[in-house]
Image (spheres, rainbow, N blue to C red):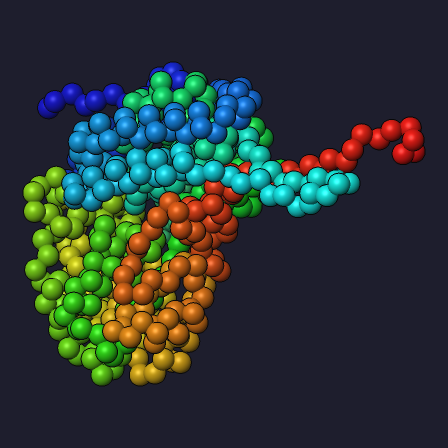
Amino acid sequence: MASQAHYSMTINGQAESGMATIAVINPATGGKIGEAPDCTAQQLDRAVASARQAFPLWRAAPPDERGAAMKAAAAILVENAEPLLRLLTSEQGKPHHEARREILGAAHWLNAFADLAIPVEINEATAERRSETRHVPIGVVAGISPWNFPVLLSFWKIAPCLKAGNTMILKPSPFTPLTMLRIGELLRDAFPAGVLNIITGGDALGPMLTVHPGINKVSFTGSTTTGKRVMESAAKDLKRVTLELGGNDAAIVLPDVDVDAVAKALFWAAFRNSGQICVASKRLYVHADIYDRFAQAFADYAGTIRMGNGAEQGTELGPVQNSLQFERVLTIIEDSKAQGHRFLTGGDARPVGPGYFIPVTIVDNPPEDSRVVQEEPFGPIVPLLKYDSVDEVIHRANASPYGLAGSVWSADTSAALAVAGRLETGTVWINEVQYLSPFQAFAGHKQSGLGVENGLGGLLEYTVPQTITVRAPVTACAL
Ligand code: NAD
């Protein structure tokens, strides 16, 4: 067997191995592809100390200089896109073309935030006084990212954090640590030592980071359950937090749509990345007048899709990323079976063969209170749901503890806008989904998150306001 590549953490601009390692599995084969260092408490202390030491100089650098370093880093990602995307596919499972989009997306985020400026607010400018509010960096930020988009979602944090003048310790998920470790190695000279540290470890490392007294802010993307733990532990010394959490997005299809075209678009809305997207369409509400035609078109299109190893040409959908998630999705399928739900396709509760493959599964109009409707499966399974009136479907869509995003589909954009305005979510797309941009705010309502990523609001999350007022010097005669 070929020897596996070595991956090191980046702490204070230096390579660091672990005393122990965690194994990384290719979800398409079940085989081990490498090992990531398991960061010790002492190594974490060193990473925090280096980030604290780097902070004053990095903060003092002109924003354009920080932006230039970020653009140089983006160029390194683009130059190395090919090996990085292969590594990403091997640990995450997504097809190569999706992995390429992710790597290039990370470079795009760096370039976009490199040029984004933070305005100074002038509150008062009179003969007597000038008052202005600046937005100054917070200090050392811990970035914690999930396994579904290990690179892109890490750079959603790295880019605004560094542009605002903070330093960072980034921890990817233990299921997908390798591509971010490799990126840390590639970017070692792109920033001054200590500005960007990349560390990896098992389940203990996240909590160690969030309680560490040397960290001033935690920017977390992951499940709602973990997000609550992060907030609880950050509360001890009032660390700032940004939380991007789970979702159960509704897609509402009005009766006037082009059924075949929307069925195809919604297939990808639900199943891209094998359904492992926070803003995947997870409940598809289709008007009763077109439900049967839509269900047929949706199932027919699903039958044309090729699932397989993301490294093989022609693969459109990869496996579920890890064994825990695989088991979780299977329990939801088993529950649907036990409840007697009808499947338009899929429904194999125990797929056979190596790798964590679950065939595309579409559940035909299950009851609203079933697990597949109420929970976020985060895998290749979606319920199609029939509705009769707009008021009814809005009520059903909003009856969720989540409020991440949603979509409305119609030939009549005014009718779609009227529905969109009544949805309780941070983003609503009309006739598209998952359009995300570094220039556009992305924020979860309700239990889908706290704070905002992207756009000027996302950049400001990495700052604290500082108001300075200036009066003319006090003189003896004024006293
Ligand atoms: P997760 O919550 O299990 O893990 C996310 C990260 O947190 C990982 O790096 C993990 O190691 C770390 N972690 C685990 N326990 C921790 C703790 N106690 N303290 C600190 N860190 C800890 O999530 P996941 O399974 O990796 O990702 C899937 C979830 O993420 C889904 O619910 C999905 O909707 C959500 N997600 C949300 C967004 C968004 O932007 N809103 C984007 C992608 C994924």
